[in-house]
Amino acid sequence: MATAERLDAWRPTHALLRCLVTVLVVAPVALLFRRPDLLVLATPLAVVLVWGVVTRPTARPNRRFALSHAQVREGEQALAVADLEPVPGAEVMSAALSPAPYVEAVLSERARQARDSDGLLTQRTAAVADAEGPLVEGRRRLLVGFRVTRWGVRRIGPLQVSASSAWGCYRWGPVSLDAQGLRVLPQPSAFDSSAPAPHPRGLVGMHRSARPGEGSEFASIRPFQVGDRLRRIHWPRSSRTGELHVTSSYADQDTHVAVLVDAHYDLGRSEGVGGAVSSLDRSVRAAAAVSEHFLQQGDRVGLRVLSARTPLTVPVGTGKRHGVRILDTLSRVVPSVDDRTDPVRVHLGVHEGTLVVMISALVSPDALTQAAMLAARGISVVVIDALADGPEGAVPSADSDPLARTAWRIRMLERDREIRAVQAQGVAVVPWLGPGSLDVVLRELAHRGRRAGV
Image (cartoon, rainbow, N blue to C red; front, side, top):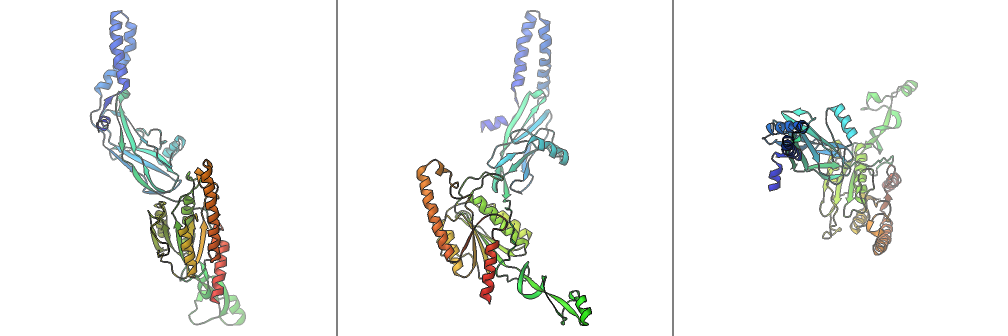
């Protein structure tokens, strides 16, 4: 407490003390030995000493710390904004961010470019944002740029602010301002699928129905009937036959997609965007990509996170705002094993006709048990294997401990046996390969659904 109070007051610096000692030592020596040249050398230091003491600041700057954004995507840049009230005598004000996991600094070159283009000042995290910042509502605004490289709820800060008087004679701070929370949404992986979703049942969407209706895909040309729209008239056929003919189309329907994320374990090491990924990184980004893909097609998407610490659920919905809600929920995922919950008694709220996309590292037996139970109820289930880059590099401790490496290989053999057992019950298990990962499986499920309907 005493240290914080001392930092929150103006105190002399080593520069002032050096000037004082030099003047007190050189002046008597010059007068004693009649050396006017020493007096000439000490005169500038005496002027700085008197100037610094006369213009010493007395008021403490009021300060405030905030972030430029409440949420960003991982890999995007943001600004830490420090508003300091200018006080008489304070000439230089500065701010610096304390280092934090998955928070990178913005290079000085990019900071200058940002200031030139947007009128904002950004500096690297370890450096300082000085008093060149704009004056906003009587406050000096200091902006420090940073970049967050991994999804989640990140703590930005604490932010250190300080100020100095003329010639650096007196200094205030550094005063620590409390860290601020920033929600970092996951960046969806590259994903696209040309295969139709099975069991389309809704009235809107991009999936072709087996029945005719209002849609965008051509079906046939037929004679005009009462109730047909005039814009559907096919004039070439009508002019040849002398009777009105119209074009018919297949109805566009949507489907219900339930995305289940297994967050019991996080295997591997995460280095953020552009680096190594862990199994949970791949699961979260794959879930974001799958949700975004089906939402763009007009489908209804819901989300369920299987974890002991964050049993998160997003109800079924559509639209861009619903997609942002799903991303925000994924950013709050925390891995934790739930040993007290029986997977047989967990009700996921999935009904017949739903496409279930489960994303899991397939290490927890609970996820495989629930996938098998859903398939036994006649629900289309696709399991995406999110284990990062195979079993060898998933656990760092296996590189140095032979016993851990042997135990991990045994667990991987058991995992392969469990996957084969689940596949035998009709559950499709596919690796996450980006675009086209689900094409073959979705086409097979759609053909299977049509055969069952026939």
